Image (spheres, rainbow over the protein chains, first blue to last red):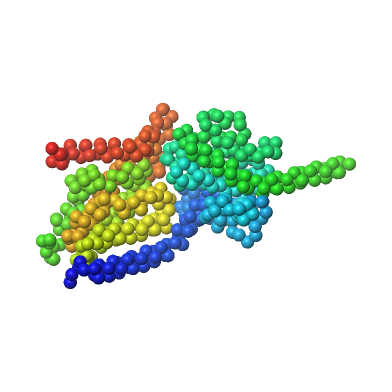
Length: 261
Length: 215
């Protein structure tokens, strides 16, 4: 048989492609459950580490189970808000994490922004917001945990797709991330975000800034822009929560005053 | 080829297919193939190990499949057929890694996909599998995969030990050494240092095997 005639070549190629396609589809379907679980667990782990938990993940035998249990234990509630700070009903907050880029780019009223509420062992309530922005080589993202006053940062984690190892990629190290602990995003009621300043010690004493990464200036700027843009997007919600807190404070003060009389 | 059907599975000739690529015919340090990934994935031992296994699986099975198909492949689309088989195997490996060792697969990132373009694999298919029976081809694939993997592991061993002070993620250099002023060599974590290590290995290897030295 002539192996070089066109009909043979076309049939050969078609049959081969069909076999390969079937094989790969079967493999993909068989494994996709596990893969999705892995990605979900990675996100849950990131949210946990924003609230300072899940640190033993590398020490335990079954990492997946450990993260899932911790997540169920500490993340007590999640909801979705739009860009005007109004709660959107019927949307799964965790599912939104797959495509945050589209959410931050959507028109204000159509945005669906996830908020995760965590309750620590001592009863402290934390609000975890998600962040998404651009680094030097690709996207950067992260989670920021605000304390009950919607002002003080409890913790933050960042991750990236392809920043330079040793330089921009340092944003995902604890050394960079822990700089954010205790910083505040408001100054006398004005939103300031967190600046990422060039030079070691540049942010010393500044409650609204952290030190940038040496050699990772563009990535650091990306993180700064991401914090500013994403927190601004959440700002209507944050302002509402802060206003509610203030009213509650005033009310409780009046109550105390009344009691004194 | 002159191999008879009665030849035992592990004849001296077949064993040579396995052992040759480990030293005298090593794909990395003698044929200088697959350098790109051996620079990229060798900062830590664990990803290097997973990469070594992945490449071994792909070379072995692409050789096996191509050898089985070798009599029916139309010569004019030979290279395309090779690429389809190799690409399919690599995608399978990538899917399995994503499902079972997600952390490592994240560290290896694009380099799993890039196994498709690893010269070792197409080189072995083209040079060996198309002209040999399935079993020797399979052994040749394993041998070359192991030869490549061995180099990855040697490079990663040196880089992780000197660059991070750990092996397989476990701390080897004691804290007390750091207290006395010892420092990790961060240069080891960057790809250029891997190239230098490859160079040093080639130097040592050729000084032991003088007939490999080019005139």
